[in-house]
Length: 255
Image (cartoon, rainbow, N blue to C red; front, side, top):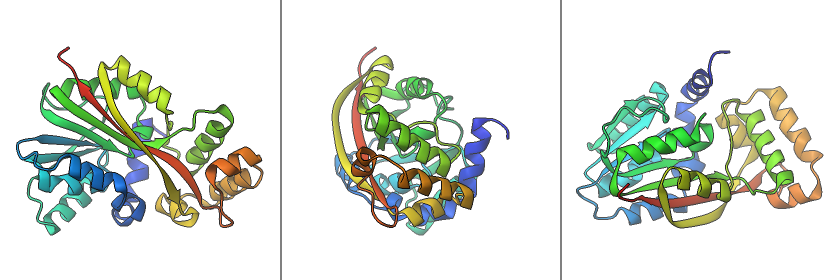
């Protein structure tokens, strides 16, 4: 089956177009908040780490000097480049690689942002260390992702669902895990914003081209889940559900 990196590349190269069209990824209050936060940052260089189909890049590009859309999948990067051209966003450039070994000089960016990507990283501590290296002193990192509810019962069901849907999934971290990981990477957390993210089941599995047997397994897991899990997920009759998402802003100090 190859390495984890191979799995991630295979999974997302096959579904690049679907992620460009995905309403979950193309929309969201977090994109509006991020665009507002970077409003007027005309001299800033931004790294969109694990850019996927590029929605974060498209949202912030009009506000900054340049955006580097960075991803493991060349197919995703081709989608980003094509869409940026259609949108006449000439300050977006693409670069291929992995989060744990960034091909950039130290202190290259004012902002390092990542959206719905970190749960695929094999070594989040190493990736955060690299983010610390490439962001400038006084710069900001912004992390947007689904987060674990923390409680073991709820967490076990969420991670199992995610892994059955997408074999390249590693982990949705809880807020406490993120806080500890960012502290180890020598970031200072300045703000966090959470919200509920509704996932329409049929679109959720279709977007990742989840095989039928694994879709059946997810449905069986949900059908047999205890009341606490069903209530947390706000489970609907068609198996659609809601999860918690977070936007974390942290800064790099002088060290």
